[in-house]
Image (cartoon, rainbow, N blue to C red; front, side, top):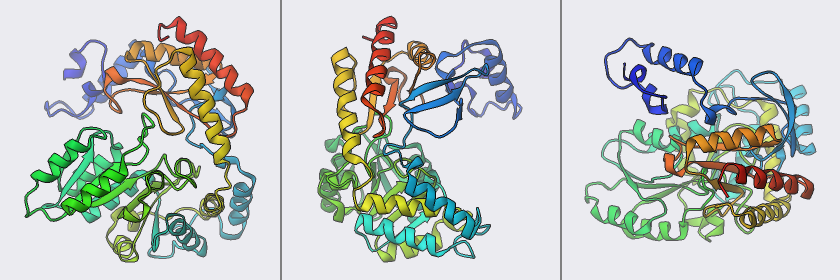
Length: 420
């Protein structure tokens, strides 16, 4: 197959490509490559974490060595994975309800805890109702493929999350993609639509997960109204972080009441697992009966749901440490810029360090990790290769000492690798 003939393989070389080869040929080709070649940018993927995620976390390297790192690779921006109230609620629920449900939500998989969580999510978004779905990825896939179908049109930002594009593909709708955050391009697409395509849905991330910038939602909702479209926002990385009270990107742009479909995950700031959709009572009722990833999936375990109830109490009160987070975000941004790093156009707790070369990115990241700093690599297929970068995720529990040490390591190794 093609993959076996290429020089150092790239991600796309091992995808199904219709070449008629035996099904596992690509599996063997990838295994042979990884057995014979060291690819720097995957060196830090899939490492074991020993203990809870916190500012200082113990990890195990592939060779079995364990060592502490300063954690700049977790989406638990508000450190809620270890918040005492959250952990205590989860422990109590495990004793009271057991550790799992063993049923889908529409059968015997819904407890009072699940309903409480849905009500709290709706309160947080100031909507009539909400639905919780066992996985954030499947929330996008399920909701999009439930609401849209052949004859409808979906208009997507080019940088939307993979789960959004997978949901679009599964739906069978006509999918059009506009340039990232480019409102002129979005309007050109909307203008070009046929009157027969009345089912129109604009979908965008709120905070974009790779670069940390935010969709201009005020302009998007204006265009949607002008051209008769609905708006769906996946604000996985914005909830609890951006907006005057942490209610996300729509709050930041003053248009919460103009978003038709509010998607989110329970695995970023909330620190657990799962997804949800908040909106009108009629919308949520429809989703309960037609979202296949909801009614064909076992519901979330009660200990997780109990912990999430405490999370949303804290978020509703804006008492989860958001001010401390933004202090740390600004400190890290200023420190990185003073060192000479290109941090893109971030507006959130995600800070990119632009590199632009996969080999250099991998070597830089591996040296950072071995030097005591954990970060994430972002490259193809998440972004174009020439836009590959490190992604730093800031947590509110980082101390000044943690951040100063992190900046020192980044500065030293950034010079070594020619990034600054």
